[in-house]
Length: 427
Image 1 (tube, rainbow, N blue to C red):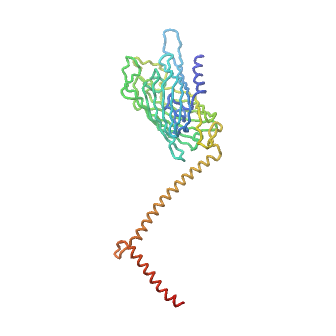
Image 2 (cartoon, rainbow, N blue to C red):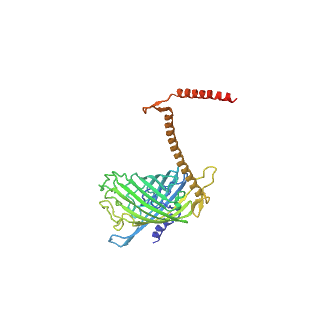
Image 3 (cartoon, rainbow, N blue to C red):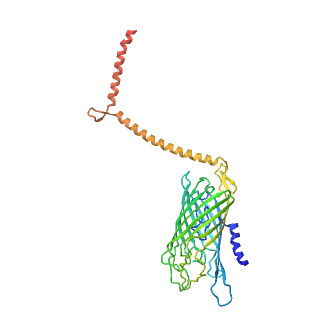
């Protein structure tokens, strides 16, 4: 009993002290970046130069009846699936963010006490925060890879993995009513991508009797949608996500079925640089087991599903540095009850007005350019009319400028001669 209690409290305490508001590992849709929900990535990139860390602990257990034994022994056993990890995120620019995630502990259930210490390493690069200055919509994409470091793969209750270098691509879309600090307003997110397991030629069982090598590389579609509703120091989140195989792994894979989950969660902000998270995964997909337990492949327990029917996540996020303001300028934002807020009450209004002025000036400049082109066209036509005249036949021919100038001089001289006698008479 004490051992079970320790097994349950360990991920709870680790999650409360170390873990993150995001989820880079267990049953994940994709390796997580520095800004996101429990399972979904956002299209927003961290501020340039910001370095943050995440850690994670997840827990699931199920009590199942053991097969009949000849001698005395327990009739039931509790199977635990515990995972913990740590991730680091750094933003090289306002468009690029890199992530390195390491799963530190993972139960494997290959025997009574088997576990991976450590498990696999994840790498991800996010290119995001694309969109107009006044646009409430942002988009981006991520690339990610899974580097095998664990001793054991093909683990029940976890995503399928054959122990090879895997990689994928994920498209991101995020919407928020607040353009300056999007997490402070209602925000909505969509993820859609692809994952390539790169497992051709792999043997999942690892015994001589295993004749089911992977002939075609396994591939899967990733999808998800979710939103967050912020209030004072809390965020209330809800997500739906899943994975559907395009090319299914061989029959000796423990987790070869499609899955779908919904995840309600709560995020607490004790400070603007920290966030504590609790989320609860609920499986929406069926409990179908498509694995064939052939010679050499042990069935852990007939009552265990391929994917957990539920899972608890605990987390925290810590920004270890605050990007410095531009030289000679004061910080634009300050901490206010665990959230970032404008340093001046009118700052947001001023910035919005400046953006509107900039866009208005750009529109006026475009109009001036169009008007200039129109005036140049009119002037060209006027020059043509001045330099060319029409004959009685209606044809256009040039008018001699010399004749025009000579005629004007002669007329002027004649007028002067007529005025001279009149002046003499008056005198």
